[in-house]
Length: 154
Image (cartoon, rainbow, N blue to C red; front, side, top):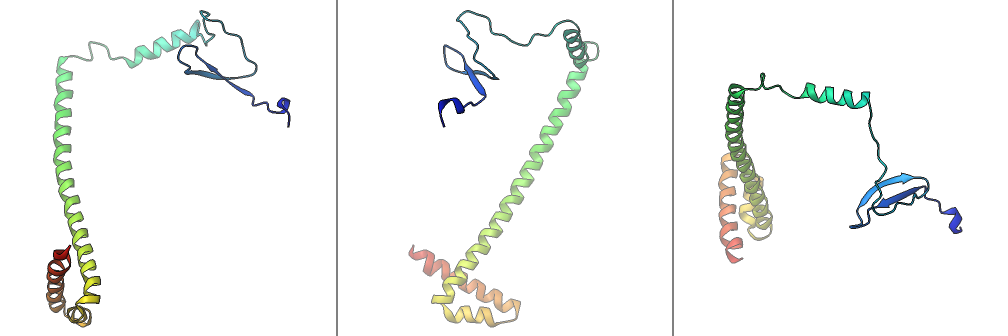
């Protein structure tokens, strides 16, 4: 492949002082001299009138937007903000409670893994009993052992 076969088709035009990208154009490079105005898209006639008309429709007139309306909007926004603060507080508390439950479950699983190796009698009792009350008793016993023996040494 020679240099003639590497036609990319797109040419980037850069601004002189800081080298920022102005635009990308197809075709051949046009010579631009310093101080010369850059070519752009200019709207004339009806296109400008249509844009001005649409902008005028989007604006609220002073008759429709008065001080009372602004106060009502401010009150409504304050109500929304207070409601969101209360909802955020409730949501935060809920997320923290879920995180605490997950952490407790993780601690129990870790304690069970340690007990399966180093505290075999309590682990076997926990695994082979059917009654929930008995399992809970050995769960507490294993967690206490884990916190004292394993976590106490670290």
